Amino acid sequence: MKKIPLMAAAACLFVSSLLSAQSGGIIDEILAENEISAESAAYLILCVAGEEPASRREAMERMRDRFARIGEKPTVGEYAFVLQNELGLPRGFFSTLFPGPRYSFRDLKFLGIIQERVHPGDRLSGERALRILGRALEEKEDRS
Image (tube, rainbow, N blue to C red; front, top):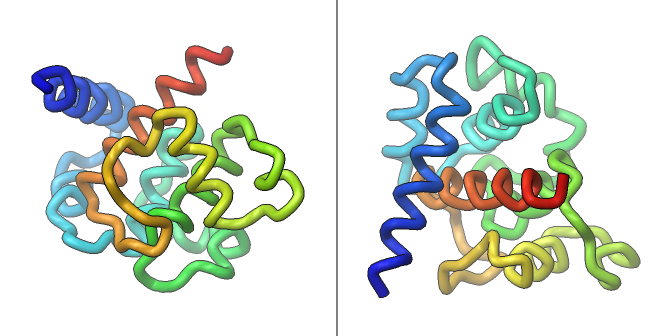
């Protein structure tokens, strides 16, 4: 039971160290969001992909084609779908046949990247997005 909060804290520290070159204010704003915006999700994903957008709006412009099917407030499944595609995380059988948020969510759940009790259609908070991102980066490094 005590391992879960420690792992969550470690994941947040890991992601924040990767984003340390960015403005701490932007990360604080993202963490404070109860429902993360598509711009904030794009900003986080581009930062860990090696591109460094100047703002969340610029990040959204760069990822406009990849976020075309995603609404203004992405769900956990939609975030998993974009994250899986951008980081090149492994895909399962159904995710390969029918790419989309539902099966990307299931793949990341199977890999242990999404650990919370959530559903693909649930809204995503900034804190949860950072935790998922941290575990996704750990998974990518383990597979490298």
